[in-house]
View (cartoon, rainbow, N blue to C red):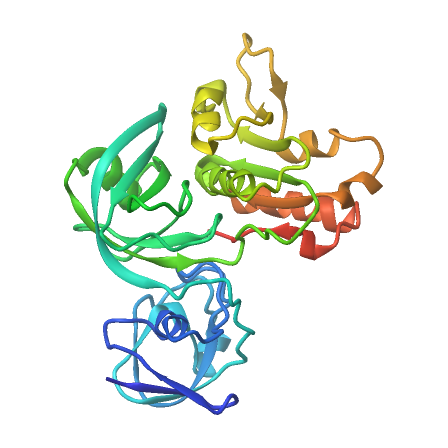
Length: 335
């Protein structure tokens, strides 16, 4: 098994040839930096000093010609074919996070939520160990590569892992979920991953902001918020939709969160039909018109999941325009 030595840290770890440099490091409890885990963000970029690796995605968007010239590669997209020495600055390790593991899971239930979105429930004999808001990598039968999906449930003793999936036109992963998957099918789950997990030591109330399948991560956050008895005021969950057909019914949201406390669940429709009488516009505008004055926005913690442009608009409005401390904002950027 190849040994990976981190030049600047005087540390090393073993990496199975079927694993990536990034994920093997995380399994060993090392603070290898990352975010998306699928080759798009560039956070896991390292420099190969010696040794050889197999590159899984030569045209990954996070790598440019300058990186290639300087032997910079992505930890999530390289597998070692020999012992290697690499250069990267590692992060401190969050002690609350369990190292990721791979295991088999069986599809046991499909719940359709909208015309193009459903929750897929899997059972595994490996007890779920993850924090609200984290995600896993799913290896689907007959589909090349892995798919990063946030858990929509929380840790439980029943062995269940739940994921909300939105159909993407031409997407091979979502084609498997919506057109091929059958009860009893097995997949491989690798997790948990992610940094946007619920901080239970904060005394600030939270606002959850979601778009598309990002609602899954926010349901997990909200469930953990109430399970840990953190609610000192009503939780706010704002969900941005394109049309009213994309709205997830409040009964499902309340049932998933399993709280008797009041939940302020607001849907914001960006392309409303003439018959729509609810909230209209973009999610960020709705948030920034929710309170009088800018100072009040500093009194919340924000958890968000959704399309990159949604995340960027929310970040800009909170950090730059309202001076919300960056440590009050949590998200994992997917591309």
